[in-house]
Image (cartoon, each protein chain N blue to C red):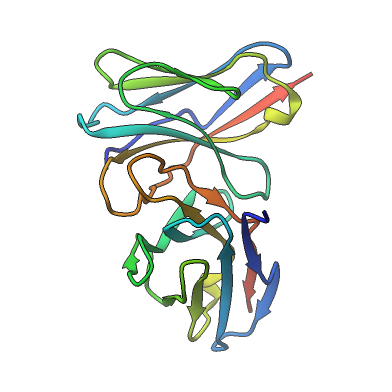
Length: 112
Length: 114
């Protein structure tokens, strides 16, 4: 699976959009981009995933560049409860049980 | 619908002791996983089970064994605990097919080995 690079930390003002970048320059054509987050001491929580097209759900939007070498997770109106570590993961679409390889993630601090 | 449950929540072991961490899911998922998370680090995959009856090694399998007891339950065993195994252990499950690889995580077991 391709390696991802994320900034170690970011700050965001409450109510503003949080834009979390991820580089995955070695991504292959059959690899998906997944985002999870981990609020302090809890198990990680799935946010969103995509292959080529931009995706949106009730939690966030995922923007993937045309060359697929990078992506951005957007939390449109960040709240204090969005303070967490956000993980960008690239994984192959296979039948091997969907295992994920987590990196270090980005620690997002939402400030009042 | 409890999701993914893990027992115990906390455990302290002495070096050389053995124990089994239990994990169960009630979502009829095919795949189950065990991860460990050391302080300030991301999660690392220990073992996974793509489907009932199969298990495979992840990134850091040494010192651990697993059993997929049935579709619901996936246990992790430490035969001879070492201080390096002090960590938070998370179990997860997913449908495991191409339609959905979303993983659901349990609350974690905090293990200290002295």
